[in-house]
Image 1 (tube, rainbow, N blue to C red):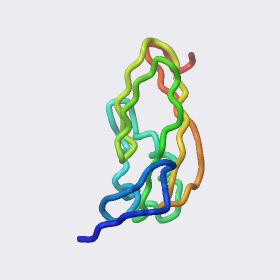
Image 2: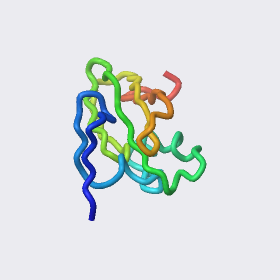
Image 3: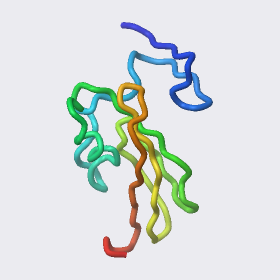
Length: 113
C-alpha cells in the first residue's frame, strides 16, 4: 500500500492525504440510484478510457434551501422544499480539471417545470 500526500492543492484550501489517486475509477461511478445516475455519470462515460481513469467532482455554491451530500463516486443525497435547484460542479480526470457543468434537482415538480 502507498500513501499520497499532495503539497500542491488539487482542491483549493485543502491538503489531500490518502490512498494513491484523486477520486474513484470511472467504472465505479454509479449508473443507477434512487434519483437516477450519479451526477457525473454522463460526463465520465463520454471520456475515452474512462473505466480505468480516476475521477472526482467538486460541487460549487448550493442554491438556497438545498441540502446536498455528495459522495466521492458522485452519488448523492439531497433534500429541499418543492422547487427546481440547479447545482454547479467541476469534473477532474486523473487530477486535472476537464470541465464544469450543472445538474438539476426537482422536488415535487415535474420534469417540464
